[in-house]
Image (cartoon, rainbow, N blue to C red; front, top):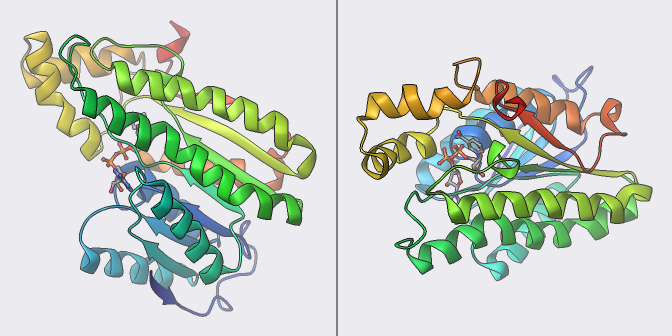
Length: 275
Ligand code: NAD
C-alpha cells in the first residue's frame, strides 16, 4: 500500500470529520474521486482504492494529503477478488488504525441486449458492483460495532430504483445493493452505524463517456442524440449531476447530523425517478 502522511495539526480545527478514517473504493476517477476529495476537505484521513497507474496514484494521494493536511494511503486491490478486498481492509486498518467511513463506489458498466450480453460481463459486473460491497461491509462492521460508530455509503444509482434497457447486469446489481443497504441497516441500527445508498442520475464521468458509443450502437442513434434524447431526457433538470454534489451528500451522511438516516436510497438525479 502506498501512503502519504502530512501533519494534520494546522488544518484539523473546525472540520466536521477530523479524526475519522475513510476508505473509498474506485476513488481514482469520477464520483469516487469527488467523494474522497470531499471527505478529505472535511478533515477525514482517506484510503483511496482503484485500478490504473501507480505513479498517478502516488501523485493523487500526495496531492490530497498536502492540500488538506490529512493522512492518505492507496490500495490497488481488485474489487472483483474477495481475498484482495480482505487484504485492503487489513492494510487500511493498519495504516489509519480503523475504518470509520466506508464508501463502496467502484463500479463498471456494459450496455448490450440481454440475449447477447456476455456471461463473463454479467459475472464481472455483479462481482464489482454488488458482491464487493458485501465483502467490504463484512470486513469493517466488527470494528465499527466495537467503537459504536460507523458510516457506510453505497454509491448505487437511479438504476437501483428504476431500470433502463440494455443494462441487465448493472440494474440487477444496483437493485441488489439497495436491498443489501436495507438489510445491513437493520442489523447495525443499534450500534451507532448508518448505511445508505446514494442514487445518482447521470454524472459525466469516464464511465458514462464510455457508454455513449455503445448506447448509440444499441439504439441506432448518434452520440449527440444519446446525450440529449437518452441520458439527459431521463433527468427533468436536463443537467448532468456533478461529482461535487455527490461528495457533499457523502460528507453530510458521514456527519452526526445524519445519525437517523439509515437504510435509505437517496436519489440525486434531477427528478428522474419522480416521473
Ligand atoms: P469511473 O469509471 O469514472 O470510475 C470508476 C472507478 O472504479 C475507478 O476508480 C476505477 O479504477 C474503479 N474500478 C473499476 N473496476 C474496479 C475494480 N475491479 N477494482 C477496483 N476498482 C475498480 O466511474 P463513475 O461514473 O465515477 O462511477 C462510480 C460509481 O458511481 C459506480 O458504482 C457507478 O455505477 C456509480 N454511478 C455512476 C453514475 C454516472 O452517471 N457516472 C450514475 C450513477 C451511479
